[in-house]
Image 1 (spheres, helix red, strand yellow):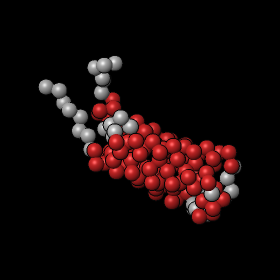
Image 2 (tube, one colour):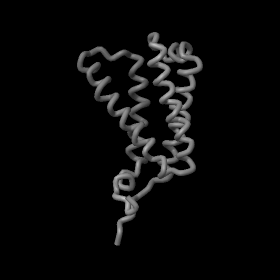
Image 3 (cartoon, one colour):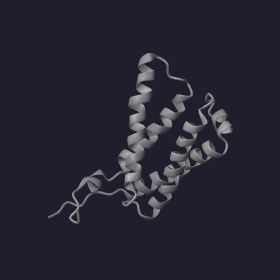
Image 4 (cartoon, one colour):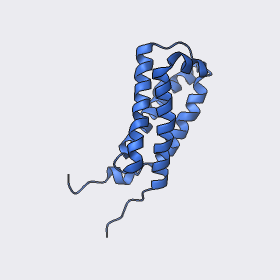
Length: 137
């Protein structure tokens, strides 16, 4: 008897909605009104090219997450990628700042928001489904 992977469709769809709204609207703001968006978050002036890349990536996550509402399993790798880059950001960017005692105060809100995405993604992503060997491969 084959074990069927447990899939939390409610969590998956919830994370797609959260990503579509959070990342999508953030990306849109970063692209269309970058100065206003940075001012709202009280962030220093950003390089427009790098800031635009980040905004484009956030917007792309938001848009692709809309497709995940229709096909939650097919688009689960989007959540996996989102979770992975946020974990890398914590380890590669935030931890060194913490160890140096140089964490900017405006980063705290991003830390809290990104942590909610990571926790939600860990709960939602059907790792056993994504990592199981497919018979058609």
